[in-house]
Length: 67
Image (cartoon, rainbow, N blue to C red; front, top):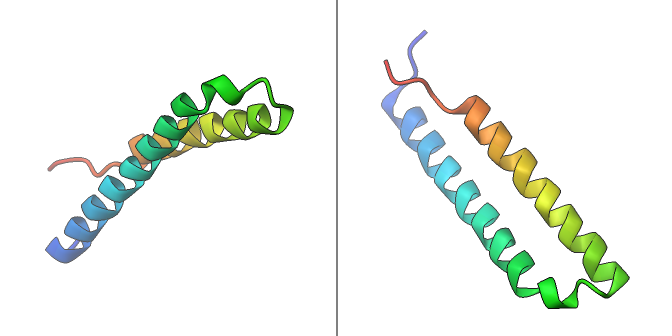
């Protein structure tokens, strides 16, 4: 079954938004590196990095294949 154009457009826009959110998380982690001596910040930064990895892997795995 072929996806409709609006579904493909919506999926592309959603992926773009998720990548932007992942980039924002990465920016936050980089800006907060100097705070990593705080145990709570270090744990949160680790969480952000893991979330970024999982999110990017999922997006790559679910990217539509151009026909």
